[in-house]
Length: 78
Image (cartoon, rainbow, N blue to C red):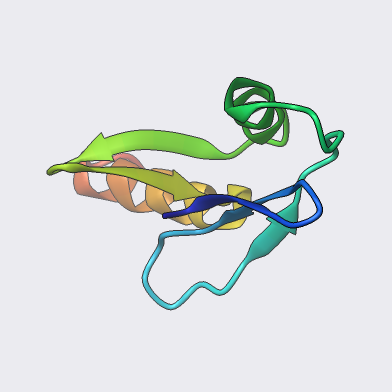
């Protein structure tokens, strides 16, 4: 699980990119639900994608690397 609610009601998101150990505490209230946490993740610039059978949560730094690699694969120069 890459989005977790831990006692006393704090939400955290973990980057799923291999080798990345980014963990962010979200700016939520203890009573906020999953959808509020998801909105906060998107507002922070994280990429959320469905890969294979899993939801992946990619931090902004890893997202930038993925975009650069995809551009190179398509023949674009940075």
